[in-house]
Image (cartoon, rainbow, N blue to C red; front, side):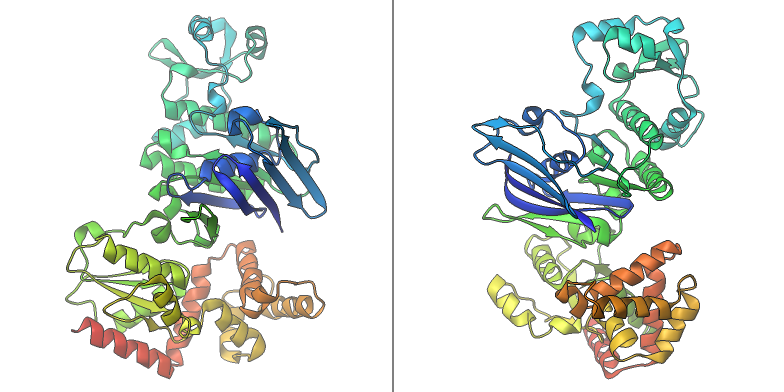
Length: 496
């Protein structure tokens, strides 16, 4: 289940549909400058609250609209005659949104007269800040929960008297009181987020769904080490308190900490249409070849983590790494791999001596020549192919259509120790036969089954890496002609 959002004629977006996830966890929205990230995330925030539509989206265009669909619920935001109308309908969800520097709620109370008033606050008007805010602010920014031990908050009655919309904090720095508005941008941002989270944690979620936290470009004010600790904190909050945390970002640090399935890459095309690439691997999202500053003799681009493990296992078993530097990276879908490989070569993103190799899932082998012809791309070394079609199709074949009893028992005995694999497959078959699963394409390509397996892994706190590792070992224990074919390709190419 997801919240379907449809945007029409809002800022730089003509028509766009996005499914807001409803399963707790961390999600990243990324893309190049001007791709529409901030507009998408601010539109998404209107699913649970009413911002100043003019402030966020400007004067509406003809027919400007934002629609949300959640099962039978529908929320409508419309504009007519260059005027925004108040939203109609409720999705019965809760959430919190923190915009970029321009639209951030931390600056709502800022004007020169207020700055002067806040600078002349007496200590008697302050109380100790909560442990939640003090400790987490210290941990995230300085890895020290006692760093802000002398952090204070303005009393509620003082806030009301001054007409403040938000609480204000003060830090005692060697006897001098520093107001929140005079603190660093990073401190200011996190104080606002932490206080809002604290309030949200004290409230009940509505409608049976997680609460939503939408954050826009939070990396603008934080050091990379603080970003890593913030991600850890947000992941813990999401897991323990049932939150969906979606943030827009350009940060490599942030994107690398998110699972590919939870990364949404906005690709704006020449005709101004926007494509959502999901799942999206961090390499593709950031256009960054990790460690490439040191140079590699070969970069092997594959689709996913299973492909990466298969290739790396062959490289290790055949001793193909002893005299060369080889980087294997998972990029995403096969069209992403081909485009990224071509862009890498054309844009000179690697050293001139680095050779690019491409290894794709076997099921799209017949589609590759036509795609490359249409895209007008080519490579000196043609793409090669894995011994299996894809991870999802492989599992559908081996666990449902033509059961591999050895693999089935390995997964059941060593991985699915909560709900058994037998029960999971029975549930899957029941839902398919009774029309509970209606997406024919996802049923046929194995993605529906894989979603069910992945959900169970999350419930028992297992990683998809564990699943991939068992499948990889099984493939090599039952060596196929395709494994041998791929091995020969790697040997012949890397020993040239």
